Length: 216
Image: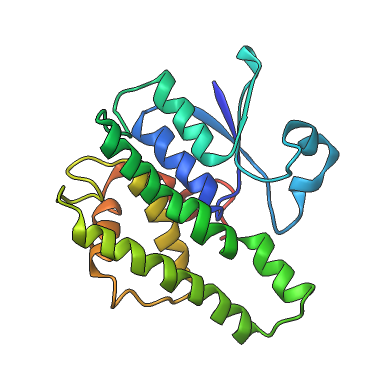
């Protein structure tokens, strides 16, 4: 069985949980509390030298995987159904590009270690930190909303009637934005997809508050 080294509020871990749930792949969660710096222990660093989450391990197969998109692509290739990427090469590239706007452009600027660095090393105020966070959310969500408007493949998800890698990346980012009281008044298509996904068991099960290490 897979072991997922996980932090309940991590967007990257959230993505992997959704993918595992959609594919109905059983896994054991091993909490790594980022605020308590459990990721910097020698034991965890030996498993993941980057000292980040998630890490997906299968000890019986001597498999250790890091980076959420790489993990999800591995799951897609080893258990292709239900598919999280379309078969058409052009459409597949578009789904990947959509996902990477979130995973490579928005999230790296707004994740916990960046916000902690801004607060404790550069010593910005809480207001300045929130301005930073919202600036990059607005830049990313404006692009995503436009892509959804222009997308000829309409449906309840980002690309039609079935969830894809795009939705897997979008939902955790929206969840975190809402946690910081970010308004989605200008992003109705994004918010509509988010509301729909919040009714689906695989997405519900992956929510931060449903995880064993969630704060009371």
